[in-house]
Amino acid sequence: MSDLNLRQDKSVCVLLVSIVLVHATGCSLLLAPHDGVLDTGAEEALADADADADADEDADQDVDGSSDGDVERDAEPDVDPDPDNDPDDDTCVPDCRGARCGFDPVCRSYWCGNCSTHFTCDDGVCVCVPDCTGMWCGASDGCGGTCTTGSCPSGQYCLRGSCICLTPCDGLECDFDPVCGDWCGSCGGGETCEDGVCVAETECGTIGSPCCSSAPRCRAGVCDGTDCVACGEEGLPCCDIVPCAGSLECVDDTCTTCGRDGEPCCSGGGDACVAWHFCEDDLCVDCGGRGEPCCPTRRCQSDLWCGGDDRCHGT
Image 1 (cartoon, helix red, strand yellow):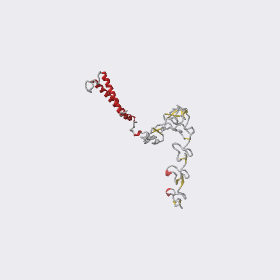
Image 2 (image 1 turned 90 degrees about the vertical axis):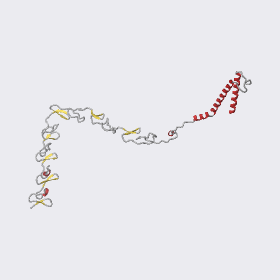
Image 3 (image 1 turned 180 degrees about the horizontal axis):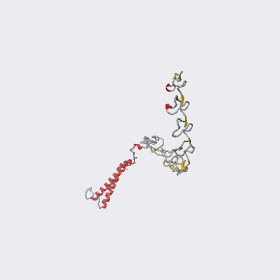
């Protein structure tokens, strides 16, 4: 419908309202006291009708004009000003951001590094993992601590990183426990400790008797492992304190003569052999006599001299 038709319809409505108002007040437009002028009631009615018509026209203009623009603006989609949230943008820049291992925390596509032995990656951080596999009790766990479990010597078990004896002094009566190190006790009078057991004390330490269990194992002679035997004489074992008697020398744990031709050199440096002998290859050799090697410093016995062949010669 055009604007002209709307205005005509509104004018007709205004006229009808005016006639009704005039009829209600008992007045007639033809009998009006003033030429072409309505009375006060008619004027107010016409004014109200015009105001209503203007309001309706403004409303029509709002519907036809500005309201359409408002609807279109409200229908426009929201635009995210942050370009990083663009759903069509699939570009991601990897960034380890302090991570030492594993994938980067931004894109989960870039490998930031590996952890060394005994370490595992936990949220980008290398964490040490203790390992006591096959280790001794109390050994290092590889992370600065100690293994609270592990192997122990026979008869012991591992408790909080320390080997503890199951039964200290088990079967022992005296001396120290060789496994646990505990003191197991002492023997009474007339007894001696033999391998951790108290036994009746018997004569020991003399020639022909068993060796004593404690030092000195032999008061005379020397212990051959079981019994005390004589020592120090030629052909006998060397003694503990004074190995051999007299001029005998201890050679290969046996007392023997030394210093003469064909005998071992005695200890004592330059006097390792008797006069007119010298030590060669740990044996004493005659020297200085006619036809014999010259002694050290080319010496020979009287009336003899050391020749160019390093032997003593004379008339």
